[in-house]
Image (cartoon, rainbow, N blue to C red; front, side):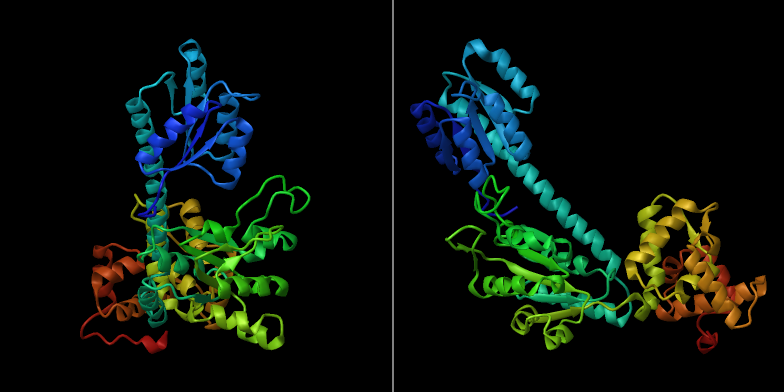
Length: 462
């Protein structure tokens, strides 16, 4: 939630004196105040400028305050609504509370009574906004664990994220599908000083081509068939924060030109409007395509490429950082089986290390979630893995001329432990976590296979 977050207060009453009094009370509390004399006028204001707190008279011209309440709860569910009523209609006000009203106020009301109700409604709005912000931040911190690792390539990514989080510089994140591009974008936003500002995600590849412009920039009422009311776009929703353009390479060229203008001029024009709207957003874009090759081929605008590509963060595919697989597996086990002490057998870990993971980290996560759900024992073995991994494991073993005998599995187990033990520089606690086995089991296997200081681990034979 923004530090300068101001509550937007709408008073709806057909009596001008009541509206004027409520506006004065709202302004004394630092609210941005709006007023309307009817349900229709209130809905028109809400379409253009959504309110956080609404106080409405129960008896309004044409449609009642209860009708307005139901429309607000349908279209703006986070808004808090209080109903004003005379003493003879308290029963109706109580019914309104059952429909979602925060409270009711009886006329005539004392100024301090109205002030107290407005303060309480505003506090609830702020608490909900703070909760949502903290939930997004925790989600970002939790999700970022999915891209942690000890490999040099992923460490380079994390160092770059730490440097970018304090800037407003445009960032282009590249990498194959499933490597965690959105996780990096969230980390850049939520780990920096702008974390309390909006973070809006746009999947450019999923937008309907004929509606892309209206989705991004908004539209005016009557701009096209079906535009029954004005609507702000996603860029305006991200005002003062970050907009994440996922798969930006999928945008059609006409839309690329309009996006470039927004980035250069820092203003946009909603569809059907003659007026420009100022926007101040940080742009983080992501793509699984080679945009440099695309602009050279004429399918992506060169000027937009250089506008987006101020700083590039490249996420390596999982097949290029297989040393991170054991620790990723451990983190996924902690997520999907937090109360258990599941172990991964050496044969299963070897199968995971042999596989090339075309779906990257996302595929690995799905694999572990599946194995946790389908396992028969307190460990995950090769039989618990998807068919593609089992077949790849058998194929790799047959190419080495190695039937799956206990002796052969012990050899694979030793090679896996040696590889991990070398990766963590002899840290037994970390090695145990990466392998998914207890410390006692690790010590027993280290002693059995003579692995550790003074032992000659023949890694090259792996």
